[in-house]
Length: 177
Image (cartoon, rainbow, N blue to C red):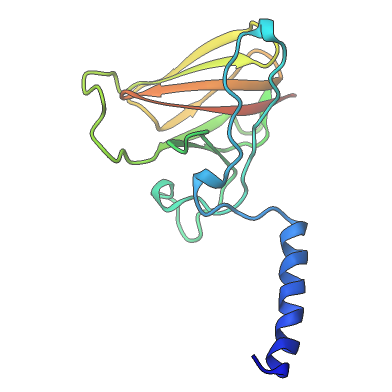
């Protein structure tokens, strides 16, 4: 490489290093998302909150029905099997006006047929408030799709998601109104 090429390459490398340290990059795939903490019994104490709301572009498999660049606040499941597209961000407990806690659940297309074709398509959400025994169950009839998911208290909620013989987990944070 000639001296001019090295001279021109040095600022590019420096700029790339500075840029990477500044703002978090938008993940190209769900695997780049922070994993959600597993649901553990409250007796073991708080497990922490791995909720990571992405503001970047939705993955191609989740942007049907959106137009253009398809950017919306969203959280990936720990296994990357599902994404929660958040409307009315932040999710809020006791909201009296403004948007509801609408979540569009989009499941990644299954690579293989469902392990249990007789499993109900209904999306069953079992949510546990971090560090407590408070647990609620919500259902989305017909499987992943539009929903309003309200919880009784503000905090970090660990979600177990089950649908069509598939599972994933994620954390979502709800704030007080």
